[in-house]
Image (tube, rainbow, N blue to C red; front, side, top):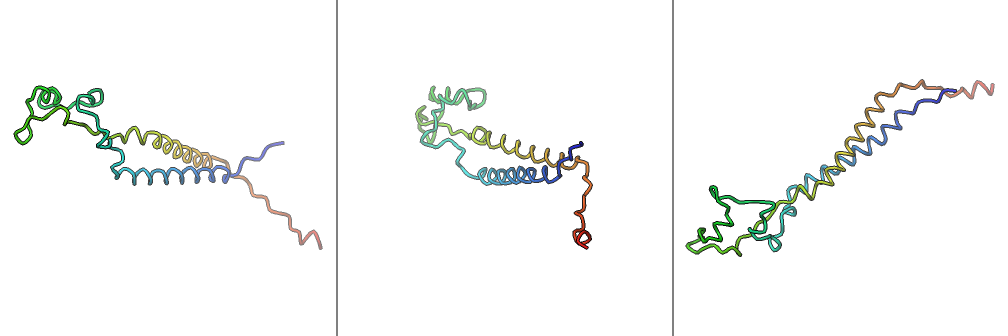
Length: 136
């Protein structure tokens, strides 16, 4: 006995769901990209010297933190103090990484389901028996 092949709807329905989820997530990410919430808050911004593992600010060939420590940087005629220099980081890559992975997985699953539906052989439609002719 041969098993009937699954219906195309079996693959199209989850494809629509996966693609809808990926569309909603991409719209949400696009909206969030315009906001300032990914930057380090000003009150939590690390000192320039503490930002070294993640960032270096160069002035010519010299590190800005070295120039500030040596007193070679002035602002409005006054020496810039090392305590006055802070750095804000844009953490969008760390914040959105998980969302981007889910978005890519949902879009990939939707495309895979659509491809599976397109590759399915068509099933022959069976007509229901004519009940009226059986009664007569």
